[in-house]
Amino acid sequence: MTDQQVDFDAMIEADQRIEPRDWMPEAYRKSLVRQIAQHAHSEIIGMQPEGNWITRAPSLKRKAILMAKVQDEAGHGLYLYSAAETLGVSREDLLDQLHAGKQKYSSIFNYPTLTWADVGAIGWLVDGAAITNQIPLCRCSYGPYARAMVRICKEESFHQRQGYEILYTLANGTPAQHQMAQDAVDRWWWPSLMMFGPADDESAHSAQSMAWNIKRHSNDELRQRFVDMCVPQAEILGLSLPDPDLRWNAERGHYDFGPIDWDEFWRVVKGDGPCNRQRIANRVKAHEDGRWVRDAALAYASKQRARAAQTKEHAA
Ligand code: FAQ
Image 1 (cartoon, protein in one colour):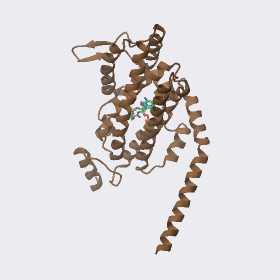
Image 2 (tube, rainbow, N blue to C red; image 1 turned 90 degrees about the horizontal axis):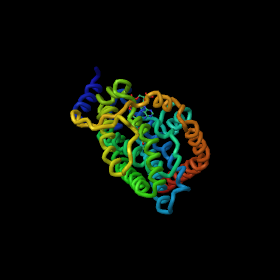
Image 3 (cartoon, rainbow, N blue to C red; image 1 turned 90 degrees about the vertical axis):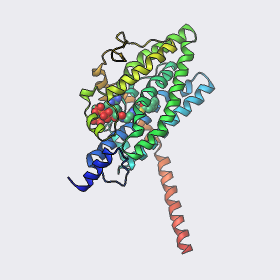
């Protein structure tokens, strides 16, 4: 074992942060790039399901809030791509891999947003699941990722509350509005549980990621935490969760829940969900349409750099 590996292992053992200047094993670097890139891609693809409702939000206030939320998701993508870049990869390359279907994004964003209540369900359940998964990532061993997560989690918690408030308003509205809220929860509940990834005995990366202090809890532990959190919140909403097996288990001190449809999960992950093709096509088009902005920004930056160099030369 090299001295560098010994130092790295000691840092992990002491629960210290690894920073970009530190030596790290290639497998640790690669695993972080994989996870951070997937996470960043999820944030920017995740703008689409809710973005669909910006023009149809039921009031000016709802529209302003939703626009701010969708912009926040873009910001999260930017912090995460920047964190990935500290590991020696470029944002352009990561985006190319997303567009070519070589890197993943969260399965959840391949489901359609059929009604306004879906915006509430995404905020409550999808952002709720994201926070449950991401709060422990604020203690991830890689410094730039952990620090990005602190700000992201603060914003996600606002997102979750706005979704809950939308659902609360609908659930306490007319019978038709209550039904719309219930229908959205029925459709988003199971895909939200799938966000945590495969069951522990099927999770390829969990054991190593936990040994490196990248992940702090297993997929099943976090999924259980999420279920335990949602059940009392659903009761306050006056909405039911679509699982006949959901019940309190006093012995375990947790809610038991029914089996997850893993065939559906893997189908969606492998590209055959209800909206996979549409999401990637929209993303590629947005990237192409934005090319002139990137070109102009680069041309401006290089002109500024040349001007600064000239001024420095004159001064010397
Ligand atoms: N979808 O061995 P594991 C958000 C893949 S952000 C698709 O258990 P790991 C904000 C996994 O990558 C949501 N693929 O993997 C928002 C691996 O494939 P690979 C995203 C999935 O890394 C809200 C394979 O399956 N959050 O919602 C999924 O140990 C509202 C085997 O899995 C993050 O990315 C899935 N659900 O654990 C935005 C959080 N699950 O890489 C807009 C950071 C697993 O070998 C609106 N990521 N896979 O090709 C993580 O915590 C972890 O990466 C997990 C997966 C927990 C997602």
